[in-house]
Amino acid sequence: MAAATVPSLPPIAPSRGQSRWIGVGGSGADGEASDWAVAVDRTRRREASVRAKQERARAEARLLAEAQEAERQAAEDVARGREEARRRRIEALVVAKQQGRRLEEERARQRRTADEAMFVDAIAQRREREREIR
Image (cartoon, rainbow, N blue to C red; front, side):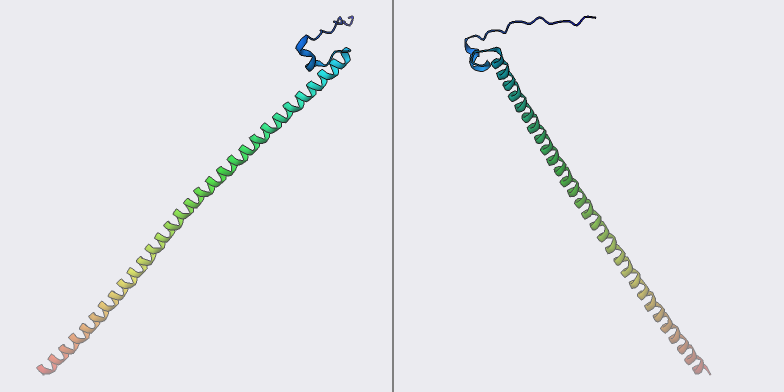
């Protein structure tokens, strides 16, 4: 297969207002160099714009991550506070229950002591009655 050749077209002459953008007349080489410089400049600006957008996106993502982390920390603090309050309530209930048990044990001890004293008194009265009867 034969290689296809593209016919060479003559360069388009700039109209009146285009000379300042394309170049100031002369050979086609100056215009091509100027076009190349404009294209390179445009590419650099585009790349700088893309880098700036990416940096803004990274900064926004970083801020979002920091906000989420702060929110997570706050939620953990709230949960920790609730757990601490629950633990304190349970400890207070345990202490109150222990005090109630001690108080009940003391009352039972006092009842036993009183019952023993009444028993001893009853025995003493019975012995005295028996002595009186004899």
